[in-house]
Amino acid sequence: MKKTMLRPADVGRELLSPLTNLSVLFSWLTLFLIVEFAASGDVLGLLLLLLVLPAFFRYLMRILDSRAKGQDPGPLSVDDLLWFGNAWSLFVIVHVAVVIYVTYFLGSKFGPAAMLVADLLLAAVIPASLAVLAITRNPVECLMPRSVGGLISRCGPGYWVLPSYFLAVGGLIWWLTTRRMADFLLELLATYLVFAFFALIGAVVRPHRFHDEVRIHEAAEPDQGLLDEKLQSERTKVLNHAYGFISRGNRDGGFKHIRAWLERDPEPDSVWQWFFEQMLLWEIKEPALVFAQTYLSRLLMEREYVAAVKLMMRCRLINEAFKPLPDDSELAIQAAEYCGNDELVRALNMPPR
Image 1: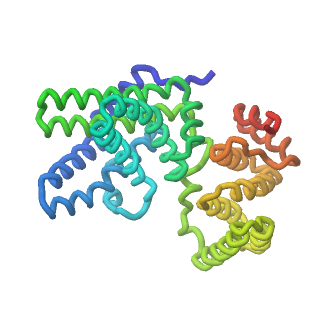
Image 2 (image 1 turned 90 degrees about the vertical axis):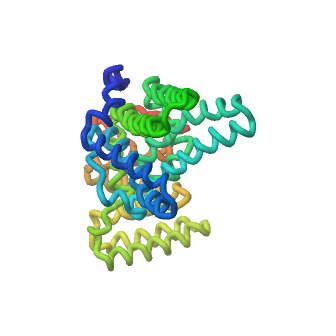
Image 3 (image 1 turned 60 degrees about the horizontal axis):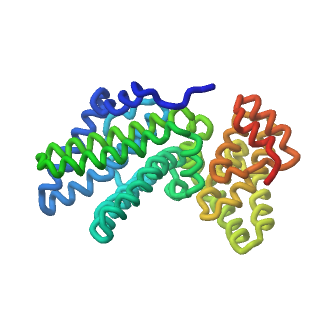
């Protein structure tokens, strides 16, 4: 059985990684010093703070994402300072805002007991929500109870080191504020512990190889430079027209319009994946999953087993009840066996609910 729980030595290694990894160390210190300088200034300081905040949160998500894949996050770059591009990584600001709101507002209005209960709930779900955000790069998905709960369930007992760390750090910082510790040192320690927290989240989810199961990064943010501008525009028009049908309840008409385009698209190898990914951006995911069943049939017919398994895992991450079309069940199981995905084999063999 594959070991998926971190050993104490692994936990310690991740907690020390902001110190032992020079690129992370210098990035942490650079960001901290810039934020400290900006916070002590006036209007110029505010402008500097607005410039550096995207880099701070974006780099935290890069640490999580990289450690989840067992990679080096690398140093801070100029691109991290930009507000546009990879906007999903800035959604961590929402998580921070929720924690601050609960800690200060609820504590002051309803007392320590209410704040403690709320903090316990946040400690249980915040790490999983951040992990889902890094894996899917989809802010909506990281708020879905099914996705968050599914990740916690799959990580098992090893997941709970994250809520424990979350609460321990919160308690430590609160205690240090009562000791009249110098603000500069307290803030330096706090930012370090935050960096270590994101590294630890990545380490906890890494053994489960979520990124290997689903090529979400390439899927959620396809390289538009690979598509001819005119072709991109034509595909978008087709998709918008189909959405008009589907949003008004005429799903058959919408899919008929898409199928007509699929037969004449000049790049058949990319068109199916493109439509599937774009449909996932819709508020309602069900049409994308229905389209995925036909897309899956095509992959299975062409014996593209690896791509087929990744597609199924992607769909099951959105809705664990996803199944291939009845005629494709045997081939889907064969594909899962070929890829050695025993969990998917068991799921496909289960009778429909």
